[in-house]
Amino acid sequence: MKKQITMLGLICVTAISLLTGCKSSDSTQEIIRIGHNQSTQHPTHIALVEFEKFIEENLGEKYNVEVYPSELLGSQNEMVQLTQTGAINFCVASNSLLETFSKNYSIFNLPYLFSSAESYHAAMDDTSLTDPIFKSTGQAGFEAVTWLDAGTRNFYTVNKPIETPADLKGLKIRVQQSPTNVEMMQLLGGSATPMGFGDVYTALQSKIIDGAENNEMALTDNGHGDVCKYYSYDMHQMIPDILIANKQFLDNLDDETREIFEEGFELINKVQREEWIIAVDAAKERAQNEQGVQFIYPDTAPFQEACYPLHEKMLEKQPELTSIYEKIQEYNKEYASGGEQ
Ligand code: GCU
Image (cartoon, rainbow, N blue to C red; front, side):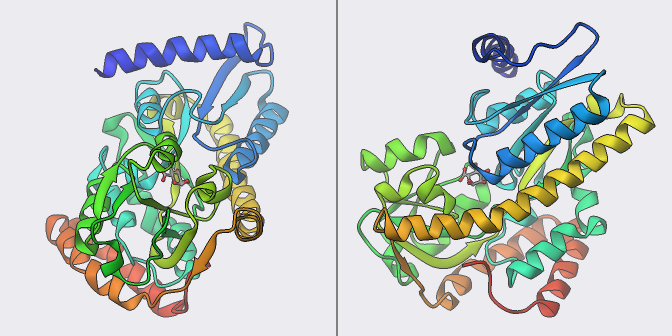
């Protein structure tokens, strides 16, 4: 299966390079391919294009960077596999999906893990907390090199406003393909329908599902707000996106080159987060004014109570993550107030 996907990926990469007429590269340059599943207006794409410029300005003789948006190289799951085998060098994957490649990532998928956006950002910026997770996947063929903001995930539905967990009963809600997300929906009483991001719009439109959960950008950038008219700030998760790299590619960089790449990874994080703030505000305004989406602010306490058993369960299954979990609780105390809404 993996081999088939890799072959397909390679064929795609070659075909897309030809079709899009990507910048010509001379034979001495190595092509660096980065895949992601967002549009070209999305903060993630904008940041990766800045990285492309930065690497080519500083290491242009050696490298030609190509950024592939919009699932051109496949779904996130497929792109992670292409990165593992080295068919491509980097991809952006939601932390949710990485849980199926390495259990360590499940901690950041816990609902109501962070008490505020400030706490989330502080924890993700603390490399003593993220490094043990980011560097733990060498055996799987990849390593995380930085994180990207993906805001706060909330429920949105076609025609039933969600005010309490009871409102989710009987509704089919798309979730990301991760065991934590499926369990979370079970605890909240809805019916979890896992699927890839690219399939959600059609599933909503054809009423295969009643709703989904994501940040505000999904309403506008992915058109979900054309179909779903109720967006409820239950604030159940702040799940980062993670830029992962093929491990062998990273290991083969000499020290000087690696340093430049590290600077580039920091640049991606900085630009993406700055652009994120602007993009979310604009998305909210557009969803409200142009798509007619109604924003709802329910009491989050009943949602939180329903989800807390997942924390205990994860710590029982993975006691090695306890110190990271406790550190996050310290940040939660330090930055106690609400999330991004
Ligand atoms: C967000 C996130 C993506 C993810 C998507 C999803 O858009 O940034 O990485 O793929 O949610 O729900 O699948």
